[in-house]
Image 1 (spheres, rainbow, N blue to C red):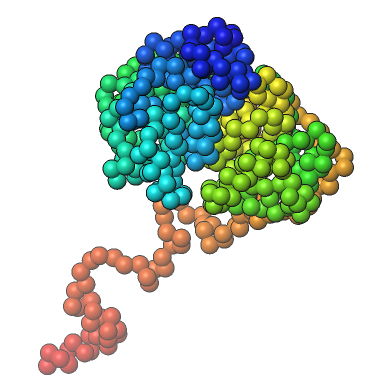
Image 2: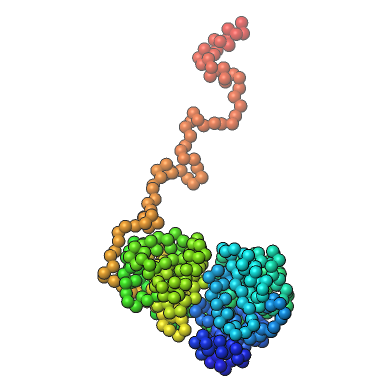
Length: 443
């Protein structure tokens, strides 16, 4: 469907066209009429399906002027990077209108953000923690919020925002429209929906665990970490690797992989994780998005805020702990009807994770590629890869029955619970002289 065919105002149509968009995605097409009806919505959409515009477009279309620009639309997201991304899209969609958009997040000083929201924020986008800080300090009120959007709900709960979300919900007016968007639906989400929302309509762009059709997936079995490094460097030298997002599952691994990649590719690479400063994270995402560098190494948490077009390849350096994260990862490529490519490295220690991922994708097996001949197979193992040996404990070996002692007690150490008479004690003391002793004693 064309955006021109939707019942949206002229300024929205103009701004959408200015963004180079003409056709709606499936989630945009399906969510629009339901959101416009005023119902609560639970939108199921994978990364890269256009869900940001799917909720912003109808919300902006229904916005009406109010004096003093109080927040009418509140959007909660899990990361600072995602605040920036959503804020940029909202500002593009409201270009040339009187709608004011403000993004707030932690990790930076609160004073400039407090001043910004006091000047007016029709659309307020933020992380739960910083939003609560601003509300509780009296910088802003949520009493005029008409639409609440919670984006990346699954990631919100995964990061432990449950309590903060509950506090925000309690501060909002009861009469409001709630829009929740997530790539997966868990039991925790079902509980939250039942507790706080009014039977939202479920809108799906694709069933959970469905890999995007415009992404070519590949799998390479790799024996160990150091061979993974050799393979990664080999692949990054290929001409078609124009903008590569490399996923790792931990901060320590991100540091380690970056150090190895930087040795060979220098300023072509950067990395982001939650321990890096805010300015370092923003600089890395901006440089990657603008093409200043073509390799970005990222952990799953901060990667939710990376909305970069034209990512040519996603490389899973290691497989994620949660199989759903695999879908999130590969969804960073193959956007806007362009084909993308994902490559996953799988070590022997990750075979169980691979099975879980393929089971999630309706038992779809990821096509396996052979290890390139030019890649050096390393025999050097990390501590985690070193084989472990179980030592035989001879002290525990016994022929005794279960529950018995390690050895039988000797007769002299055996104790019996009976009373010994005085005469017996005397006989034991004097032996054969007992009778003589007894007669002498009684003379």
